[in-house]
Length: 160
Image (cartoon, rainbow, N blue to C red):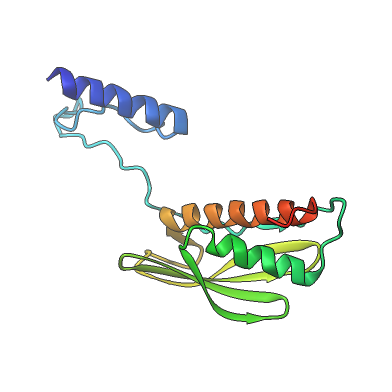
């Protein structure tokens, strides 16, 4: 029983920090409301708005060419062995991620000033018009960070 209370307290703190407690009356699923009906707390949403990041290409000691930006995208995509290239042409790299039975395809559009990551389609990720499973956003955020890291390396003149 004490373990359940600690777990409930930890869950409440997590929800409070993330701002998800507005309609949570109780973290005890067996609690009844004043009308005598049982109350089950809401789950954190699994489907969220699609994240479409735009990265500004850093302008360091070295001005990056379109080829430099493309190389940074390819290195960023391969950094965690999660994304693989399905198509490549000037100004665009198509990437796919497969995790268990889930798949997402993105189109990375780039030039010497910006890089944008745009969802093309997905499989098994609850995609609707402008929403998708929250894991997609996590994968895209990690991809964004890896691309930004590679761009910063290139802009700083590092060859690593």
